[in-house]
Image (tube, rainbow, N blue to C red; front, side, top):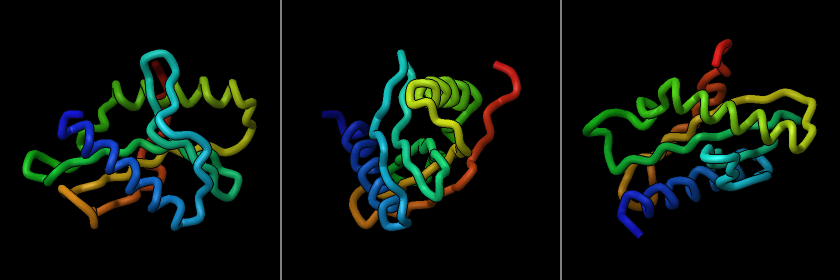
Length: 122
């Protein structure tokens, strides 16, 4: 596995542990709809949380959150809508971002709740 893929998997594992420590229940990992993927889907306080995880070795070329652009948001929202329909979920939804920086544990993690809202237009 390429180094960037390993870092991504380790970042997702660190993000999952962070959510568990905060009392979230993990529903799905790497859930796919067509070519779109949601890294983590969790539930807390009856809110379904769709989590994008961005991992970086360092911030030399920018912060992880800078990689979440409008096309990524649209893909995430499309997949989230499919998941909501499939599960017939009728409650509150939130889109979070967890940034993971470092080469090995302990990573620096930042959980940004409500990191973005679904765009009004696709």
